[in-house]
Length: 510
Ligand code: HEM
Image (tube, rainbow, N blue to C red; front, side):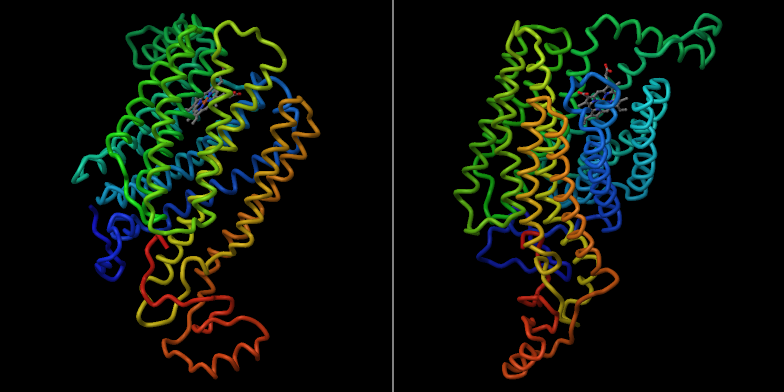
């Protein structure tokens, strides 16, 4: 059981399950770092969707072309990985009750990552694989720093648990995905200088090594290898993290407890096994890939059972929209899993429809499961980071708003429903290979992400326009007068729009 530590000191209410209420403060790094990762990611998502609206043919045609690959990496590296790695820096120390090994390294990682993913996407677009390799190496360096930083952090964990296993696995699979990505890029380059450069020099040894790697990689079917690489990133990094971190976040936000550590451990173990098998069988086009799809689905079944058990045992009855968005992401694993079974069916003839189903599978993975899970959690993490950065020092001295008063729940709800409608439209457009349908879906997603940006701006505006009021509580008649004078709701703090005023530092679970 972890301790509940408030920013101003420990105050664990005896009635609450302590692990459920621990706020992300005592062990967390400075707020600027995860905020920089999160903002970069959200803006990239927005840019990527605008790109899709301009070029809807990208998803309305088969996905083995430079534009889809460029756009995919904009989403997976610029949006998903950026936000998720920022959140890992923030949450892992909290979830595992330890400190981040080095914030400076994390900052170097951020800068390297941003330059590299932009360069990579640009070079994918131009299909200049040599430069993809160069920028990709920069990205790999950043991810190496991330892996080292998180690895050193995990070594300090007082009690190793299933969450630590999942995080360590996710970092491993990410590193492996990047390695395979670099090998695939190397296989698409030519090495004329290998003829003239002796292998005894450093440069010569490198060029010879790259040429040998390229010759090895070329023995594989290139589309199958791409699919194998894609699964390492999507299942190994994103899904593994979603699974692992939710064993901590779902109890935290719903006031519950992990119900069966054994079941959770089996889920993570089988996910690892299923992915290792999927990677090999997809890469070599073996009919056994269906069996490993089954192993992954079994892992997800166990995971789903644990999520349901944790939700049944929760003490907080209502589920806020952030949590419901996260659960919607998990629900989407149903159709994605069904598509996985169809697509891994042995001997299925390749038709235009099957190609579009592959597009749908990838899109629902990236813009469905991963994006909805991240957006749901962002509505918890962003207000918390800003509240902690802006108001935590003022608790007890001033009246300050609570987390939920930092953003608009109505904007969040509108954005969510528009997003789901956009996702449905996009899916239909993809299956029917209808560019205008894809564009219509993308436009709805743009509206939704614009609302997310507006909410993010509202949250961030507390940095330069803090809403706080003097401590003294006005009398009831005074309050009534104020309300009438303003012609609307006025919180007791004098903070317009605030419905309640927090005097206790809230936890991230609020
Ligand atoms: C240095 C890092 C990376 C490099 C150099 C790289 C390279 C590549 C290359 C060359 C392809 C196309 C393969 C081909 O044309 O045969 C590809 C496809 C793909 N990669 Fe990466 N990759 C990297 C990181 C990642 C990561 C971290 C993820 C996921 C988290 C990812 C997800 C994908 C996906 C989903 C595709 C398939 C795109 C499609 O279906 O059109 N990549 N990658």
